Amino acid sequence: MTRVLVTGASGGIGAAIASGLAARGASIVLHYQSNRTAAEASLRSLEGSGHELVQADLTDPGAIERLWRDIDGRHPLDALVNNAGIFPNHPPLTTDYPGWTAAWQRTLAINLSGPAYLSYFAARAMAERSGGRIVSISSRSAFRGEPVAPAYAASKAGLNAFSQSMAKALAPKGVYLFVVAPGWVSTARVATEIQNKAVIADQPLGRVATPEEVAQAVTFCVLDAPASMTGAILDVNGASYLR
Image (tube, rainbow, N blue to C red; front, side):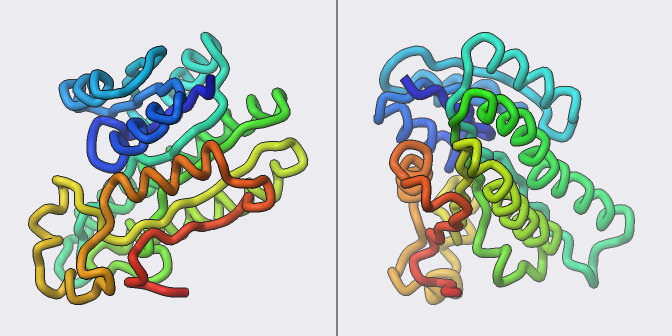
Protein backbone atom coordinates (compact mmCIF):
# COMPACT_ATOMS: atom_id res chain seq x y z
CA MET A 1 0.00 0.00 0.00
CA THR A 2 1.34 3.43 -0.98
CA ARG A 3 1.72 5.72 2.05
CA VAL A 4 1.43 9.45 1.33
CA LEU A 5 1.86 12.56 3.49
CA VAL A 6 -0.40 15.40 2.33
CA THR A 7 0.22 18.79 3.95
CA GLY A 8 -2.60 21.27 4.46
CA ALA A 9 -5.20 18.51 4.15
CA SER A 10 -7.89 19.86 6.47
CA GLY A 11 -10.01 21.20 3.61
CA GLY A 12 -10.20 22.51 0.06
CA ILE A 13 -7.60 21.19 -2.37
CA GLY A 14 -5.71 19.24 0.29
CA ALA A 15 -8.79 17.32 1.43
CA ALA A 16 -9.66 16.53 -2.20
CA ILE A 17 -6.13 15.25 -2.82
CA ALA A 18 -6.29 13.02 0.25
CA SER A 19 -9.69 11.71 -0.85
CA GLY A 20 -8.53 11.02 -4.41
CA LEU A 21 -5.47 9.12 -3.28
CA ALA A 22 -7.40 7.14 -0.66
CA ALA A 23 -9.92 6.13 -3.33
CA ARG A 24 -7.01 4.57 -5.24
CA GLY A 25 -5.99 2.54 -2.19
CA ALA A 26 -3.31 4.79 -0.71
CA SER A 27 -2.79 5.20 3.03
CA ILE A 28 -2.92 8.90 3.88
CA VAL A 29 -1.16 10.92 6.56
CA LEU A 30 -3.21 14.13 6.74
CA HIS A 31 -1.30 17.13 8.01
CA TYR A 32 -3.02 20.20 9.41
CA GLN A 33 -1.71 23.45 10.87
CA SER A 34 -4.46 24.61 13.23
CA ASN A 35 -7.98 23.50 12.21
CA ARG A 36 -8.21 20.11 13.89
CA THR A 37 -12.00 19.93 13.60
CA ALA A 38 -11.88 20.24 9.81
CA ALA A 39 -8.94 17.84 9.62
CA GLU A 40 -10.82 15.21 11.61
CA ALA A 41 -13.79 15.59 9.26
CA SER A 42 -11.48 15.06 6.28
CA LEU A 43 -10.00 11.99 7.94
CA ARG A 44 -13.42 10.45 8.58
CA SER A 45 -14.44 10.95 4.95
CA LEU A 46 -11.59 8.89 3.49
CA GLU A 47 -12.14 5.50 1.92
CA GLY A 48 -10.05 2.59 3.11
CA SER A 49 -7.99 2.24 6.26
CA GLY A 50 -4.58 3.03 7.73
CA HIS A 51 -5.04 6.79 7.58
CA GLU A 52 -3.84 9.12 10.33
CA LEU A 53 -3.81 12.77 11.38
CA VAL A 54 -0.74 14.85 12.26
CA GLN A 55 -0.23 18.48 13.28
CA ALA A 56 2.82 20.66 12.71
CA ASP A 57 3.73 24.32 12.27
CA LEU A 58 5.38 24.43 8.84
CA THR A 59 7.03 27.77 9.63
CA ASP A 60 9.20 25.98 12.23
CA PRO A 61 12.16 24.00 10.80
CA GLY A 62 12.44 22.00 14.02
CA ALA A 63 8.78 21.03 13.91
CA ILE A 64 9.20 19.91 10.30
CA GLU A 65 12.10 17.65 11.22
CA ARG A 66 10.18 16.13 14.14
CA LEU A 67 7.15 15.60 11.92
CA TRP A 68 9.11 13.73 9.28
CA ARG A 69 11.12 11.59 11.69
CA ASP A 70 8.00 10.60 13.62
CA ILE A 71 5.93 9.67 10.56
CA ASP A 72 8.60 8.06 8.40
CA GLY A 73 10.23 6.40 11.39
CA ARG A 74 7.05 4.52 12.25
CA HIS A 75 6.28 3.44 8.71
CA PRO A 76 8.19 4.62 5.61
CA LEU A 77 6.46 7.10 3.33
CA ASP A 78 6.32 6.50 -0.41
CA ALA A 79 5.25 9.99 -1.43
CA LEU A 80 4.96 13.56 -0.19
CA VAL A 81 2.44 16.13 -1.42
CA ASN A 82 3.39 19.71 -0.54
CA ASN A 83 -0.01 21.37 -0.61
CA ALA A 84 -0.10 23.74 2.38
CA GLY A 85 0.00 27.39 1.35
CA ILE A 86 -1.27 30.90 2.11
CA PHE A 87 -2.25 33.91 0.00
CA PRO A 88 -2.08 37.16 2.01
CA ASN A 89 -2.89 40.36 0.15
CA HIS A 90 -0.17 43.04 0.45
CA PRO A 91 -0.43 45.55 -2.44
CA PRO A 92 2.93 47.35 -2.67
CA LEU A 93 1.52 50.88 -2.82
CA THR A 94 -0.93 50.58 0.07
CA THR A 95 0.79 48.20 2.51
CA ASP A 96 2.95 49.68 5.26
CA TYR A 97 6.47 48.34 5.76
CA PRO A 98 5.70 46.18 8.83
CA GLY A 99 2.79 44.60 6.97
CA TRP A 100 4.93 44.14 3.87
CA THR A 101 7.76 42.36 5.70
CA ALA A 102 5.34 40.22 7.70
CA ALA A 103 3.57 39.07 4.52
CA TRP A 104 6.84 38.17 2.83
CA GLN A 105 8.27 36.32 5.81
CA ARG A 106 5.20 34.20 6.53
CA THR A 107 4.35 33.52 2.87
CA LEU A 108 7.84 32.35 2.00
CA ALA A 109 8.08 30.32 5.21
CA ILE A 110 4.91 28.32 4.48
CA ASN A 111 4.85 28.28 0.67
CA LEU A 112 8.53 27.78 -0.11
CA SER A 113 10.81 27.12 2.86
CA GLY A 114 8.42 24.63 4.45
CA PRO A 115 8.18 22.45 1.32
CA ALA A 116 11.94 22.74 0.82
CA TYR A 117 12.70 21.60 4.36
CA LEU A 118 10.17 18.75 4.25
CA SER A 119 11.38 17.68 0.81
CA TYR A 120 14.96 17.57 2.13
CA PHE A 121 14.05 14.79 4.54
CA ALA A 122 11.79 13.05 2.03
CA ALA A 123 14.44 13.12 -0.69
CA ARG A 124 17.15 11.62 1.49
CA ALA A 125 14.91 8.90 2.90
CA MET A 126 13.46 7.99 -0.49
CA ALA A 127 16.90 7.97 -2.13
CA GLU A 128 18.10 5.46 0.45
CA ARG A 129 15.13 3.27 -0.43
CA SER A 130 15.69 3.81 -4.19
CA GLY A 131 12.31 5.29 -4.92
CA GLY A 132 9.63 7.80 -4.06
CA ARG A 133 7.67 10.79 -5.33
CA ILE A 134 7.33 14.40 -4.27
CA VAL A 135 4.50 16.49 -5.70
CA SER A 136 4.15 20.21 -4.96
CA ILE A 137 1.18 22.49 -5.56
CA SER A 138 2.24 25.67 -7.33
CA SER A 139 0.07 28.18 -9.20
CA ARG A 140 -0.33 29.96 -12.52
CA SER A 141 0.65 33.01 -10.43
CA ALA A 142 4.25 31.83 -10.72
CA PHE A 143 4.11 32.71 -14.42
CA ARG A 144 1.69 35.64 -14.61
CA GLY A 145 2.37 37.46 -11.33
CA GLU A 146 0.04 38.67 -8.57
CA PRO A 147 -0.07 42.47 -8.22
CA VAL A 148 -1.89 42.34 -4.85
CA ALA A 149 0.13 39.40 -3.50
CA PRO A 150 3.64 39.47 -4.95
CA ALA A 151 5.07 37.27 -2.20
CA TYR A 152 2.66 34.51 -3.19
CA ALA A 153 3.68 34.62 -6.84
CA ALA A 154 7.37 34.72 -5.89
CA SER A 155 6.99 31.78 -3.54
CA LYS A 156 5.32 29.67 -6.21
CA ALA A 157 7.94 30.57 -8.82
CA GLY A 158 10.57 29.55 -6.29
CA LEU A 159 8.74 26.28 -5.64
CA ASN A 160 8.81 25.52 -9.37
CA ALA A 161 12.55 26.13 -9.61
CA PHE A 162 13.22 24.20 -6.41
CA SER A 163 11.23 21.19 -7.63
CA GLN A 164 12.99 21.12 -10.99
CA SER A 165 16.40 21.42 -9.32
CA MET A 166 15.56 18.50 -7.05
CA ALA A 167 14.22 16.50 -9.99
CA LYS A 168 17.62 16.74 -11.67
CA ALA A 169 19.48 15.85 -8.47
CA LEU A 170 17.29 12.88 -7.51
CA ALA A 171 16.41 11.23 -10.82
CA PRO A 172 19.42 8.85 -10.62
CA LYS A 173 18.09 7.62 -7.28
CA GLY A 174 14.59 6.88 -8.55
CA VAL A 175 13.01 9.80 -6.71
CA TYR A 176 10.72 11.80 -9.01
CA LEU A 177 9.33 15.30 -8.55
CA PHE A 178 6.29 16.88 -10.14
CA VAL A 179 4.50 20.20 -9.83
CA VAL A 180 0.78 20.85 -10.32
CA ALA A 181 -0.01 24.51 -11.04
CA PRO A 182 -3.70 25.43 -10.77
CA GLY A 183 -5.36 28.73 -11.52
CA TRP A 184 -8.53 29.67 -9.65
CA VAL A 185 -10.03 26.68 -7.81
CA SER A 186 -13.55 26.61 -6.37
CA THR A 187 -12.79 26.29 -2.66
CA ALA A 188 -14.67 27.85 0.24
CA ARG A 189 -11.78 30.24 0.81
CA VAL A 190 -12.32 31.99 -2.52
CA ALA A 191 -16.06 31.46 -2.93
CA THR A 192 -16.75 35.20 -3.11
CA GLU A 193 -13.91 36.01 -5.51
CA ILE A 194 -14.79 33.37 -8.09
CA GLN A 195 -18.25 34.86 -8.50
CA ASN A 196 -16.63 38.00 -9.89
CA LYS A 197 -17.59 38.50 -13.55
CA ALA A 198 -13.99 39.37 -14.44
CA VAL A 199 -12.78 36.05 -13.03
CA ILE A 200 -15.32 34.03 -15.00
CA ALA A 201 -14.68 36.06 -18.17
CA ASP A 202 -11.04 34.99 -17.94
CA GLN A 203 -12.02 31.29 -17.99
CA PRO A 204 -12.39 29.72 -21.45
CA LEU A 205 -14.28 26.85 -19.78
CA GLY A 206 -16.77 29.29 -18.33
CA ARG A 207 -15.88 28.14 -14.82
CA VAL A 208 -12.88 27.68 -12.57
CA ALA A 209 -11.29 24.33 -11.71
CA THR A 210 -12.71 22.10 -8.99
CA PRO A 211 -10.59 20.72 -6.13
CA GLU A 212 -11.30 17.26 -7.50
CA GLU A 213 -9.73 18.16 -10.86
CA VAL A 214 -6.55 19.29 -9.12
CA ALA A 215 -6.65 16.10 -7.06
CA GLN A 216 -6.87 14.01 -10.25
CA ALA A 217 -3.66 15.59 -11.54
CA VAL A 218 -1.90 15.06 -8.21
CA THR A 219 -3.06 11.45 -7.97
CA PHE A 220 -1.71 10.81 -11.47
CA CYS A 221 1.67 12.24 -10.46
CA VAL A 222 1.84 10.20 -7.26
CA LEU A 223 0.67 6.88 -8.67
CA ASP A 224 0.79 6.80 -12.47
CA ALA A 225 3.13 9.33 -14.08
CA PRO A 226 6.07 7.77 -15.94
CA ALA A 227 9.58 8.39 -14.70
CA SER A 228 10.37 10.45 -17.79
CA MET A 229 7.91 13.08 -16.60
CA THR A 230 10.04 13.96 -13.57
CA GLY A 231 10.52 17.71 -13.35
CA ALA A 232 7.25 18.43 -15.18
CA ILE A 233 4.91 21.29 -14.24
CA LEU A 234 1.29 20.42 -15.04
CA ASP A 235 -1.05 23.35 -15.62
CA VAL A 236 -4.62 22.97 -14.33
CA ASN A 237 -6.11 26.33 -15.21
CA GLY A 238 -8.63 25.65 -17.97
CA ALA A 239 -6.50 27.43 -20.61
CA SER A 240 -6.85 30.69 -18.68
CA TYR A 241 -3.07 31.09 -18.86
CA LEU A 242 -0.99 29.38 -21.53
CA ARG A 243 2.79 29.30 -21.71
